[in-house]
Image 1 (cartoon, rainbow, N blue to C red):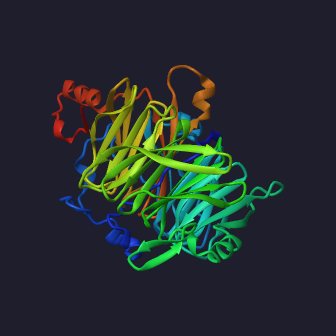
Image 2 (cartoon, rainbow, N blue to C red; image 1 turned 30 degrees about the horizontal axis):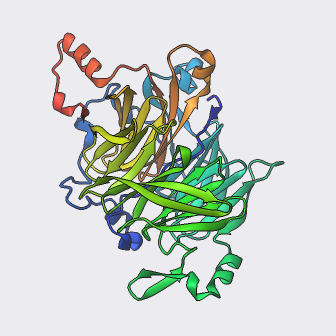
Image 3 (cartoon, rainbow, N blue to C red; image 1 turned 90 degrees about the vertical axis):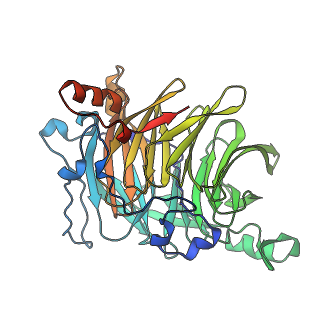
Length: 455
C-alpha cells in the first residue's frame, strides 16, 4: 500500500445525550438518544450498496489470538491488487481485527495509522503491519491527533497526554507530558479565583476538564489545540507550552465535537442539540473566543461535525441519523439535509469533494458534492458494530498518476473491535446511476433504500 499524506486533524465524537453519561456503559452510550425511534440492533443489510456487501468477502480470522500481532488482511486477486489504487472504485481493501477493545479513535498521517481503544493501548500500523504500540494507564483513548513529531491523545479521565516520536527509532513513542501539567494545577490551585462552578455547589479549576474528553482538533498554523468535553466546555491549549489559555462554557450539555477551521473560526456541536460558531481573537498571549452564530437548535443531539478544507461547507451529524449542512456565501446558510442512516451519525469526515458519515447502523455513507448538490456514491457495509471513527488520506499513487480520477483511502474504526480500510474514487457512479443500470438490466428499483438529500 503506498504511503499517504494525512490530514492535520481528525474529528471524533460521541453520541452522548447527557453530560452525566460519562460513567455509562457502551450499551448506554449507543442506545437511541432523545426521541429517536431507531433500534441499535436494526439490520442494515437490506439497504442498497453499489458494490455489494464486503461482509460476504470478509477476511477476518475471528479465532486469531489477541496476544499475537494482528496482520492486515488483503484482498488479493493478483499482485497488482495489493494496494488501494488497484482496488475497485468504492470497495474494501483490508480489515484488521484485534480482540482487545472497541475502537474509539483513529488518526492517520503519511504511512502511519494510530488506533485508540478502551484497552488503553494506542497501536501504530505501517503498510498494513503492526509497527509499534504504547500504553496509557488511565482512561480509554477517546481521541487522537498528530502534530509534527507529537501525538496528542484525549482520554475518558478528562486529561490530554502528549507523546513524542523518537527521531532515531520512529517505532518508539515516549510520553512527554500531560495537559494540564501537575505544576500548572498546583500553581492554579493556590488562587481561589481559578476555581469555577462546574455543577451545583461544586467547583473545579478552570484549566481542568471535569469529565471525559470527546474530541480534539488542531489549528496547526497558530499552534493551538482544542479539546471538547462532556463537562460542557471546550478548552484551548498552546502546544509548545502545554498550557491551557482559555476555557469556554459553550453548551448546556455535553460537547461532542469541536472543529477548528480557517480564519480563526471554530465550530462546536453538543448533546443539547445546537451547533455554534465561534470566532477567535488573539492579542499577544491572550486568546478569546466569541460566539457569533448558532447554526442549529434541535431536539436530537449533535454527535459529529466536519468542515471542508476551504471552510466553505459545514456538516453536522446527529442522533436522528441525519446530516445537515451549511454553505458559506456572505454568511453561513442552511444548504440541506442528507438522509442515509437509520441510526445516529457517530462520525464525519470531509475530503476533497467527498463527505463520509459513519453511523451506529454499522454503515458508512459516501457523499459527493458538486456545487450545492450532494449525491450518495455508496453505502459501505461490513462492520458488525457501530462505526465510531473515521480517518481519510489521499491515495498517493492515484495522485501521482494524475488524471481526473482522484482516490481516497478511508479508515473506519468500530465497536466491533475492527478497523477497515476502503478505497473510494471521486469518479465512482452514484447509487441512482447504479440503480438505473440495474433497472435497464431488468432489475427492480427500491428508491426508498437509496440515501437522499433534501434542500
